Length: 181
Image 1 (cartoon, one colour):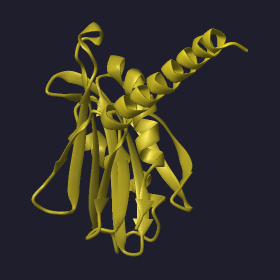
Image 2 (cartoon, rainbow, N blue to C red):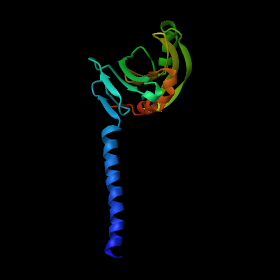
Image 3 (cartoon, helix red, strand yellow):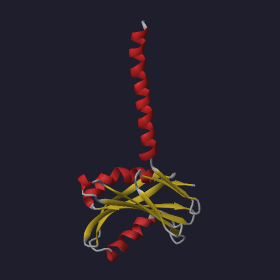
Image 4 (cartoon, rainbow, N blue to C red):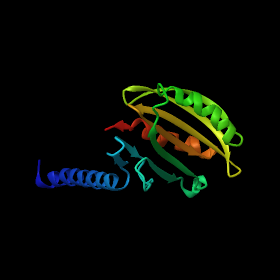
């Protein structure tokens, strides 16, 4: 192989390596999930890249919000985590049983859409998907009930129904990233 042939083989290889390194660096800096660790309440979760995380003054509540682009009407989605003592509940599965009737009396237009269980954080986690009127706008949500000892963890994901499906992948990935620390 003469030097000119080597040059034409090496240059494209270098270009591919440089492109891959730059693309990887851009992904790492802009698209990686936002890790949130709450050592005091004993959990961690990864919110989607680009979402704004808003811890509250008390460690028992945090939420993150994300927005779709202008082509999708700039709709917003929210993921929140609430932690509280639940000594009165014998198991986490009862969360759906008491919350759904309570929500029907407190939220206008509340409708249970479906419910089920996920295997998460080494336990079967009950969830409910629902809709209700929030400030005269229909909102769709999915709520998960986790338990660790006497502490209850409620993870809620919600958005307008048209945007909910667009956020579903983000919601599912975030929920599946939940870990007890």
